[in-house]
Length: 359
Image (cartoon, rainbow, N blue to C red; front, top):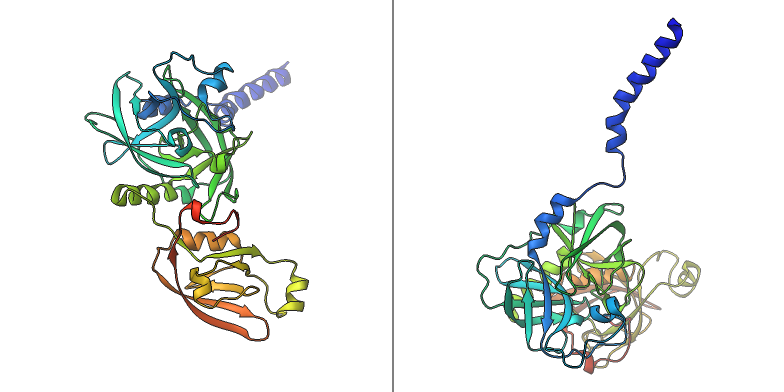
């Protein structure tokens, strides 16, 4: 009997001490406090104009109700946005406001504000709106997206139809995903889907700080989600507030990652282990004017080593039009060559060839 009693006491002692640890280890936990902190800064965006939606499923009304708004509708739901500093500015998805002039923002307190389009960027799927009378509105703070790690828990917010905000939870699946949306695509990949219910809404960490904009780069809506990192987003917002447009650098070349190292050693030099191949040049582009040639291997630009396309994208994100840099390239039958290049400003999409690897 004594042994049985001691055994029971031992089990009881283990459970008492283990329960707090088990509670802390639960995967599912409540984020109610974060939700109540964020919701007042999440807004619904609508328009008196009937939007001309692309055939990629970005219409929240069609997504929820599998039909189009009635013909006699006087307002049309567009999607979600969120309020930031400076006061009066609202961030959203470019594709939900593209081409519309009469925009209206509705808060969770059902207050309505006329909004004007400041500017946007199709490649990153970001648009900036400005509210004309923004007194007393709560805004969100940004966190540094460079500190985000794969596996970190995140919350995504949407306010698609103006009834009530919605929240989804998930985690960072991967960082720096190349989606084929151009040289400035460095979206976070999420395990929660981006859809018309949350497109344009904020992605926040468990402290309620914005780490991304829920976006669909290139118009892609899939089972996985994507978010424009806050570090990139803030840089774009600053340019839009200052200039009303984005001024982006480019080299005017088509670039590819290196083929197999065996073929590189055969065609170039056995010592070359990384670099980006110049596959084509735009006539009168910055690289062509600087005398780069098709077949050159770009090894570095300025102080930054270029080992792959991601490095090239990162260099362009940090640079400005007009900036002069020294390019180190490896050229067949000439070896390493240093070439000065002045970055140009990327032309409008209508003036560019349909080439996804154009930088």
